[in-house]
Amino acid sequence: MEIKGEDIVFLLGAGASVEAGIPISNKMVEEIEDLVKTNREWKVYKDLYYYLRSSIHYSDGIMGKFAEPFNVERLLVVISQIEERERNIMYPFIGAWNSRLIDLAGVNFENVSKFKELIRKRLYEWVGLRNYESASYYQSFNTLASDVGTLIKVFTLNYDLCFETVVGKGKEIKLGFTKSSSEWHYSNFDSDEGVSFNLYKLHGSIDWYINNNKLYKSERLEQNPELIFGIMHKMTSVDPYFYYSSKLREVCFNEAKIIVIIGYSYADEYVNVILAQALNAKSNLRIINVSPWKEGLEIIKKDIAQKLHIENPDQIIPVQATAKQFLTDIMNKEYLASQLAEPDDVPFN
Figure 1 (cartoon, one colour):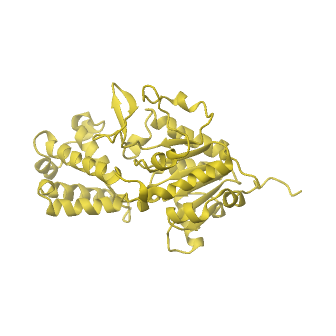
Figure 2 (cartoon, helix red, strand yellow):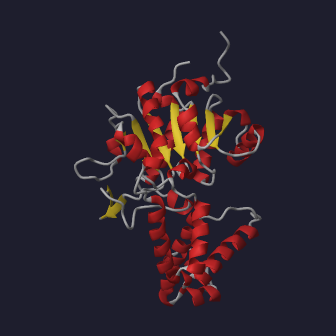
Figure 3 (tube, one colour):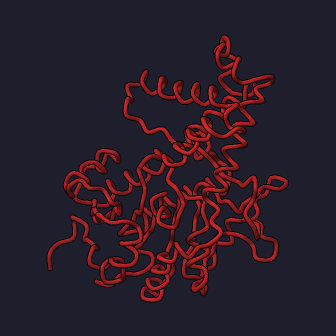
């Protein structure tokens, strides 16, 4: 069966870049835990960190979520909400801040803001690779683009530059920025002449910055890049994020026959809703899920189906491999074409 670029959608999670040297979120948390114990600059915020983490777990427990993962994004979301203080929409309904938080937060909650800034700077160091040789396995996208010959859409939840740095050496990638001014505008995706990939960075990028409420792409890594954390930020009506999430829904419903998901933990509810709605609406839509899980294939299928609340677990095709293994040893045009399926209502010839 022939396959075209519009038949394929890629969704990249943190696991796609682990082998390039970028730690996943739980590893970032482990480093924060070590820093607040051993580093002079971070030790000041140890008690604040312990309070925030225990409060997040306590909140999960009240909701009956005793196995909810804790990661650096959730920590930053909570810190950002606390920073809002009187500007927080819930402030009029809150009788008083927790006395322990007031003790730890400092005057005008300045300790909260300083701690957040330390984490963001560390995030910059975690994600901002200086050498992309370890990410060379991304070159497989170039081969696929040459074989398919038509535009392929890639959505990523990562802030790193692995895709555009490695793949961009051999193929034209459209990111939505005007070449002359480096300003983002959705209309820059309208033309695909000579373009092999459209790359949609759903959570921002370490080389993006805001100036006068406009988004720009920098030629270097930004010390305070434009990143978003958590569901309350990701589902806003602000572009490019609203445009990107709308585009993901559009291509999943109208174009895609295969969604190749690499290294995604299914922790983003708004992404899960889009995937679930598309899968339940299109019987011929398939997810190729790439992850080095050790469980059996049927267990993986059922687990993902439960997370997405989809009716047919057979729409999930688990591939037990790392991103590097999949991209270099498995993924090609023929493999993807072999996974295409006909909708249930198509009669036999």
